[in-house]
Image (tube, rainbow, N blue to C red; front, side):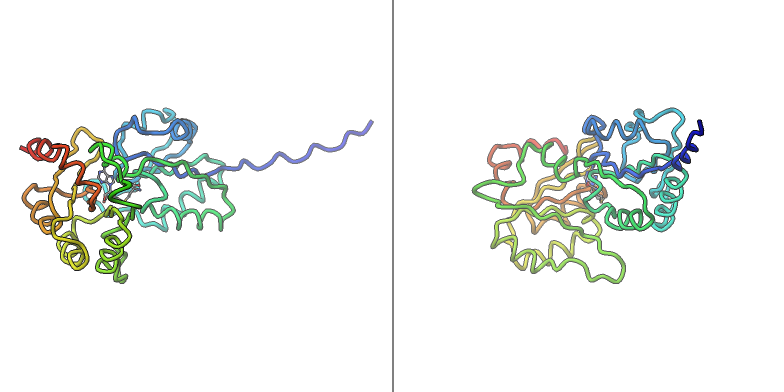
Length: 266
Ligand code: SAH
């Protein structure tokens, strides 16, 4: 009896998973992230990812650092995208490991587009974004029925040529709509952000600056909006920091924690 010929074996198909490594504490990884890291053949590691999470990687996984390490310029985005595509086309399970959540200021939109264009299967595994890690460490909610009806996550760093956030408009909106603002990448532009926000928000609006949230090296300072830049300078706080701005922090002060936090700074 003539057997039908074997169908050709399917070509090995790789995939790319964009995985959130969380804000720093490796225990904040999701189970799904741990699984994806463990199954990866190639892991592309961004800046701000705690290396401790690589303990979950296979010993034979190839680890590629694509962030700004040791003062080097970061790997161009186009190169990262090409690398992910070519590895996946060769059958690799690729994990793109990003700090916090991949969907928050992580350039994942561009990467998902590039991968889909190349016909690569792409998945996203959430991580805990820096704002949430920072607020949890302060035992403070981002929303409050009395103080904040919502949250706005905004970047202080626009791409070259982009005028960036309209801070004045944002200040008016935040005040009228009772929103907490969380500024990512805001240290370098802190003075301008402060000056512009003061056009719409009161000078005594509470601000929390949280650096290295969830890591043993975490530091935080509480101040008012009119002292934001001064506090950053005096406390020598540098990136990575989130700036949390809004009345939700008033609870913190009234609980006496502000004093504790300030004295923890020494
Ligand atoms: N995808 C990331 C954000 C990447 S943009 C997330 O979801 O958290 C990089 C910025 O994130 C930093 O400049 C800083 O503003 C913030 N950030 C990341 N990790 C942080 C941390 N541990 N503590 C404070 N801010 C952090």
